[in-house]
Amino acid sequence: MSSYILITILLCGLVTWLSRIVPFAIIKNLTVPHWMINFLSFVPVAIMTAIWVESLLVYHAGHWPGFNLPNIYASIPAILAGVLTKSLLAVVITGIVAMAALRFVGWG
Image 1 (cartoon, rainbow, N blue to C red):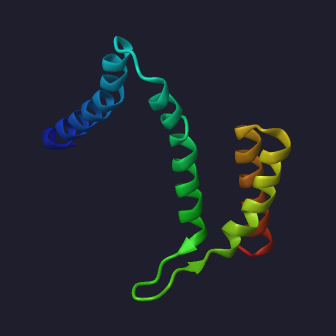
Image 2: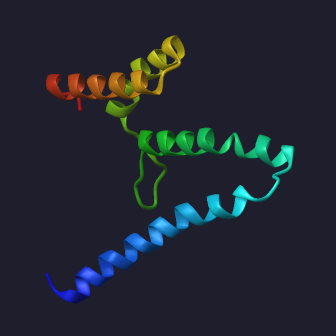
């Protein structure tokens, strides 16, 4: 491995680390208004929804997006697991097992 690649990897790691640590270091000594805390509480839900919806669509240049049916079919038991258990781990495991079962039978 050349030194250029090694330095690039180390600098990328440093930038990633700093971008995750610096906000916590800044906010630790500040008082955040209640309205901002309420607003930020929706951020994880919004991000997860965006990631989930994006995985359900297949994009075609110049056309409307289509549906990724295997992902939709695997999402149904995962959603049910989430509603019933309220556990993120149960959702992830159920989704993985559902997608594996779909691929096993040839639908995925």
